[in-house]
Amino acid sequence: MNRPMKVLLTGGTGFLGEYLLADLLERGHVVWALYRSESRKLDTIRFLSSLGLPRSADSLHWFKGELLEADQKWDEWRREYEGLDEVDNLLHSAASTRHYMDENGEPLKTNVGSAKVLKGLVELHPMNVHLVSTAYVCGFVPNERVYEKHNPRGDFVNVYEESKWEAEQIWKDRATVLRPSIIVGHSETGRCTSFTGWYYLFQAVHLLDRLSREATDYDRHNLNINVPASPVGAANIIPVDYVSKAAVRIIENAKNHNKVFHLTHPDPPTHQATLDLICKKFDIGGINFAGEGAPFTQPRNRIERMVWRQMQTILFYFSNNPIFDRSNTDRALADYPVPPMTDEVIHRVIDYAIEKDWGQAGA
Image (tube, rainbow, N blue to C red; front, side, top):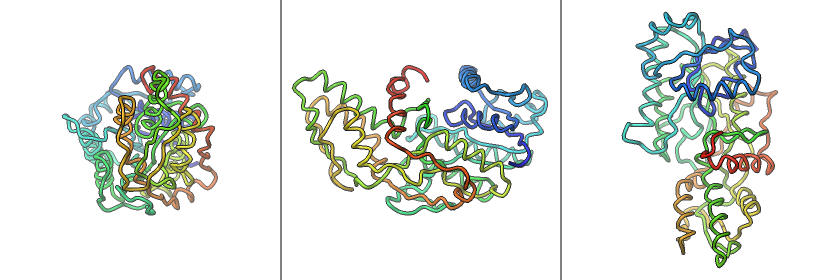
């Protein structure tokens, strides 16, 4: 590792952000964490305390402010928070993860707006910039290899991917781009604070399990549901602890700066392996993959209608299956292997989600 960094971290109270914060502190860096919610800050402090962090009073500095005002407020902030003007690295993790545009213009407002604002800030206060993006800025490219370079505008599956692509364009060749795939819970604890995306599939089947137990005349072992996807495709899931540790190790080395890195899994579970695990875990049967482009089996009753509404949101996770090149990442992290996504790990991740009632019980 090179000398300790002085890092300005955005999004430090988010799911990935709090692990980035913990790993930066664990590895001896000084962090200035921008936040706006007192309650989220307290939750993150409790999380850090459970890990015995921070290790010194000088290693973590919180400062409150609005991300989209960072360029205008910088001089005010650095007068108010002594030492802030010494930061030499910006790790931008804050993001809106909405998949569809809302009435406030999210996720474009935050994801593209913050990129523009922070570009203005860096022009005033030069520092190394590291941008957390997503591997799915490639758009809809099923079964194609995606390389660690800036992609042309693609056929995006949702506006979140598009917003991240636009943010990358603003920083093109001037920032280290960290592209995780589908982030799931901690590989050793299952801990997660955002049960969206890939989790919806398991939540839908968990709902089916509970409803079918109440309907004694419903044959849970012969559901006759056909999913329009290939069984050999794979949703590229990656544990949050790997993403965080890999990101921090990459940006520590100046040789990695201003390159693109896929923080993805080299061997994600196939759709069929995931389905087999689901059927065994929830004691159901009769769900099959009908191939890409096939019609989805229409719901036959109240139970299937409820589950169908839940599953509609995750169909693109089955149909878009890029193969992510990891050449830059593997060179940078030759001594840091990716933990295998075993059945045990997936069970742990899902059991944690069920324990937390899919986010309704707190994290």
